[in-house]
Length: 151
Image 1 (cartoon, rainbow, N blue to C red):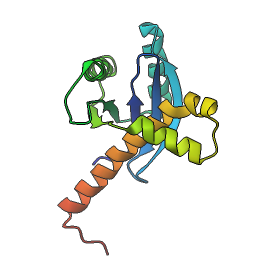
Image 2 (image 1 turned 120 degrees about the vertical axis):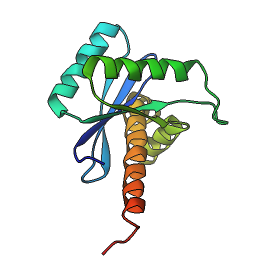
Image 3 (image 1 turned 90 degrees about the horizontal axis):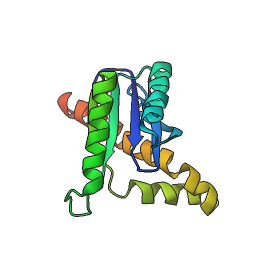
Image 4 (image 1 turned 60 degrees about the vertical axis):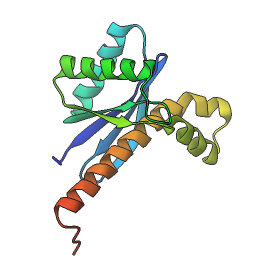
């Protein structure tokens, strides 16, 4: 896995959660929320974040039913990821995001956030969760390729 910054997106029809991570540390952090509409403003804000953080990889959550079957939001997320790639010429990887929002809500409540406050941050934390999942998968893949030896 190339070293560098990775940006994760939890796409929604109202808000898009954004997280940032580093392949060197293997850690992801919630970054911000972007309004999904209007589309031109959405991509302007994303462009500003990309210019500031200079990621070399983008990760987009791909929602499916619990059994893995695709639904309407799956296609919307694929379209969003394809638009990111087309507009910004960065590689896009999709990550299974089933239950990431529920996990984000649980984490925020455990951290003492009120339900109202948690609702404002849940999408960025969900982006962090799916980006962390991707970083963990990359680390495990690299460990397996290296024979799993740690000295």
